[in-house]
Image 1 (tube, rainbow, N blue to C red):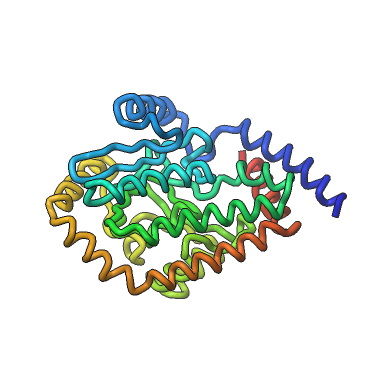
Image 2 (cartoon, rainbow, N blue to C red; image 1 turned 180 degrees about the horizontal axis):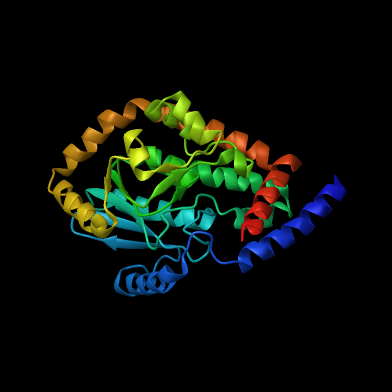
Length: 308
């Protein structure tokens, strides 16, 4: 076991250094300068100073939460990012917002878990860090399950892993035509999260859900819409305008009606979702706490390095 740990540590150091030093996987060079200007503009003009990894815009009738991570790449989720999202949702739950719009800055919606952040810590105390990460996911997912106001999601680009699995926990999902959706859990060396083991089969049927959860099939925005994962798909050039037109229509509704209508749809499954979330996180803790689980993640990182 000690030899395996030593080899794993050496591989980890090589993997992390290689991934960190490479160009971001999803960013194209022609988009980088635009994304930087957009990030700077949003952070300077909106009330984002309380947060590092998200931007929060308090709009007329709704709260707009945007992933714009500095502690991770491609809007991936680590415990710090998740805590900021939870904090913003807690504020929106208590204020006069009628709903939440959840989206992202840049060309990627969310790449799921931040494996670089996670795997760096696994070498220190595998079981302790596995428990901490699994608990962070459990609390994060429960925040979406228990949120009483409608959550509208505008998916501007790729949604991977937890970034895709949380979508059915929200209420309306609008996607850019360029967005795509993938949950390649077996490739990562992990099991499903975000209640996807329950909701994906309910939404798209067992066969299609297994294609995503077991074989990592990638869905285009149109395919995701046809299978019920996405509500509507809009053209890239008018995506933001289409979203905002519909949001402004929703915020004219009575807030009590919006909240109670969501409760009628959601409350019947709330306990089942919380139990599913608990089971998924317990299994993740077990997998990540094992030598085999760590080895699978190291191999995944190495494959990503080799692709460059």
